[in-house]
Image 1 (tube, each protein chain N blue to C red):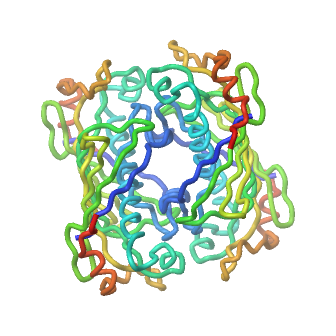
Image 2: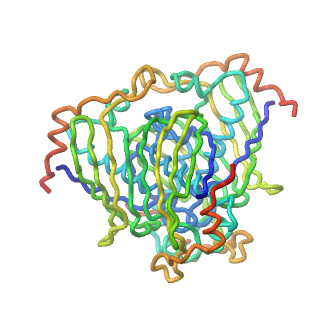
Image 3: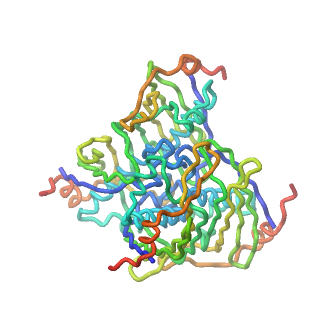
Length: 140
Length: 140
Length: 140
Length: 140
């Protein structure tokens, strides 16, 4: 299954008065890592979303916080497609700083878009080319 | 000219590792205060914006930071319409904690909406009923 | 066990380009609700945290997203102490907009403070008066 | 005077329901760019700030918003030391997406740290090696 690695540096504004990254920002990191994984794929999701098309809204997410992150830390988020279904997928994330595993987490997302009548999300099968790309293990 | 007072409590997540509110959040407070001022007016701007209609996109903003804000501080943002033009307005904000003036700032905003062809913002005159409401001093 | 209700209004800046609340902000809401629950208790946690004392750092968190939240929605977060241990507790949250249940979630938190040598968190028993307060069901 | 260029990609979570970057995030970009400028200098400011030492708290900031930024835009923030005084400096920022100038702004910052008695910020002269580094124009 597809994997990616996303490297970023903790921003000053992502910390809180405890001197560490405010915990909801770990989920923002997961979102960044998921978008980065998709950026390597066959569909330009940002363009598709900008024009009101399909994206991957969140259904469930969770994280275990194993060690704090500090301002200016360089971290790597290792993201794997852990489960791929017709209309949804599960991504698993590891947040690493050097050898230290600082957090693990997951996201369950569906493939959908907002209904034009505002009544919720229209869920639809993941396009075949995107699905087969998500299944493959990246050769690196 | 219209004035409003918006009271809120500083959230833990709005602080940074220096133990005080991260400065871009003062502009988020200005935005909250501006939306709160408009909430008293004759047009339901949130509903109008949700349906793709006109709102008040920002043109310019600035702030002077006179004293830090801390977690759990109760603050009041005093907002005044300082200038009202046909298609734009200037709002001035004061951020107060008790008697202490912690910041001053302003926002220049236009009345507009995104063009459907994505080419930018369509600016239009502020509707007369909204404009006359903005001119009035609130009786309190 | 202790329960609380926290009411807030979705801020414009908490939405994303999908027109709904960006999902990490649900965890920010959980954090706000947890701080609000503690605000009713016998210990002034904000003051204690400002002076470098004990707080409740996060160990684990998760959420199910059942329906989107929109700008200007008034929401209520119902928070319950679901489990109370010597040095940790589990809080469960429900995010409601009127009758609609929009999200459920939980936080596992320990009672601790940063070690002065920077090597991590010192975990210690929850003070007895705070623990017994957390056990009680609020009479309202 | 010292200049730097900081390139980043607009994150999904930095947009709002208008489909563009929420304006306070431009100030977060300024902060990132300022930290990046200092990262090239002779003092490890993040380390110094983590140990409670001096940093550059904000005194004043402002921005003109010339064009919206969208999700996934790659932007460059050009930052210049515009004025250098004994205890303070003024930084000017330009936010560019390709050839388009999307925003300009400034930050006035002092060199200081929080007083240990909590009564405010202790301002002190910028260390000579840092000051002379800030004066130099980067050879590129």
